Length: 115
Length: 114
Image 1 (tube, rainbow over the protein chains, first blue to last red):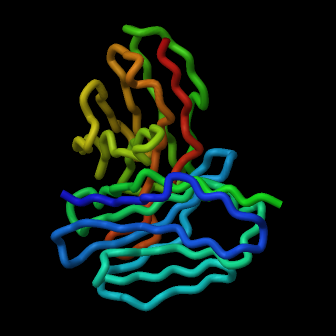
Image 2: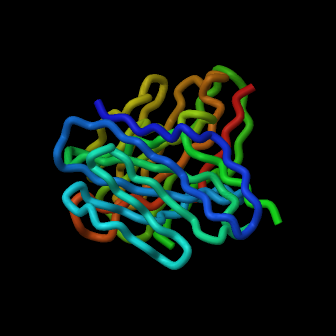
């Protein structure tokens, strides 16, 4: 069975600091898909990124970047120059290419960015 | 916006009563999902549907049933609510093409079982 671990339950930073959210996953499948979602205080879940297991290129989107390393089974998320609006719970999730394509979520990391 | 609505958005009920939550989508997506969110557990899949009248169990399906009689509606029923079912419930659809498609979530339903 697959598993996703987000060891950091809460992180607090001051605005403009860089912060990295860790995600470690476990699966025996060679084909899998990784996701990050953001849950702001309003409660909705916002899709951020999706990455396939056969594509190890890192991705950058504005202040957000993602580092995918198969060798360490990690898919870490970095926010550069954090802002108060980045305060949210962030979830990492894993999907296999199987029936239902169900998502297995990590426990989430609560990020608090203080002004 | 994936065109997903959930109703009710908030509900308080008593132990032993039946409860039905509704997920409605407007874009004819084939796959629909029900998750529950609890502190420390992230989201866990309850049931999912891959078409009208086609459903399957997820990780935490005990105490829940689902039905999908129309493409646009996916209902989650707690036959006899228990306090352990107090949670936030999210519906999702998968969309966007590719295999697998990305899941997009509704606004959630906060359920309190007293």
